[in-house]
Figure (cartoon, rainbow, N blue to C red):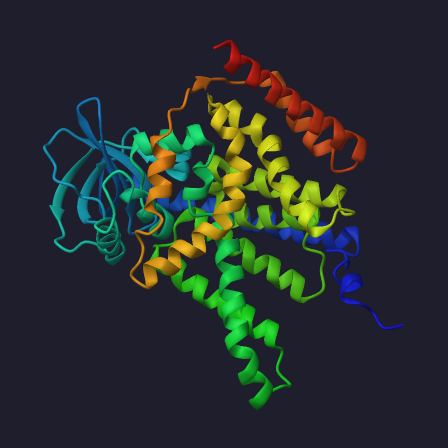
Length: 423
């Protein structure tokens, strides 16, 4: 009997436990190697009381009367510093900076640190990405301009806009991540496949059209990643996309928890700093709950999965979000709907900007940012968060526990709504 694609897609990731132990053993050795080299770099960094390097300014903002700078060095270091000087806007510029390293320990060095510093010189040319960001922002009103630089170029968002997006429950839509990579990949694949199909049919019908289209999509995404200076969130999403495609191309089931755990382990082995990245664990949690839903709700029709999945991810992420961040409002209930609409809005905005009509939908963003929103602070205690994590992991093995997890999350949502009404 001829094997179908669906059967091939269910090939297990590992055929034996020995294979699994061998792979994770190699990943553990890779992790130790990464930590070892990182520690060597740290020893060089702290060899003297100061360290001079070139770094570009990723973000600059005022806090407590001082300028706070977030920088990325040429060696890949991510760090914060402050300046009491009256600085001009430095976003996107490269500076030569002397860091005073006495207070920087190894863990801080790995996950990102704060250090006192002295700016020695400023290089005159702004990074090309930031030049394009400024051109893009000039097309829009100041109130919404940063949204577009964040959306297309991973630019920083001012605190008032970040808080407004958080109150709406759509912060994830503006931080370039796996969600954006997924939408971009789908659009690029559709365009490339449409253009490539007649050429392939005429000149080389023996070629695998889908495989070559996906390869071209990944190449274009890599150049986009390179242009954005390997933004961490996009780098993680791209790496996961490549990994997932390699598994799929070899007939391995990609919508499995073993595949997800392998990808997570691989990323951490390469970049140990991800262990300390809250953004990374938010991404992992989002993908995990998508897998959990698809694992237990396979009988649904595609349109039902599309609608219910967005609702499920919003509710399932609620305890995770509110252990770390407290902002909650009634408007966040529209987050699943806005997320679904964003799948159309994102490529449409990109297309409109490419044809010189990028301001056509600005009224939508003005409307969202002008909404009067009542925000209250709601943080869940650690024992609730721990119970939630236990239920989430146990739900992998039981549909009944999956239902309990859903009840747990909806109960928490009901409690939040009660608190808003009480307020």
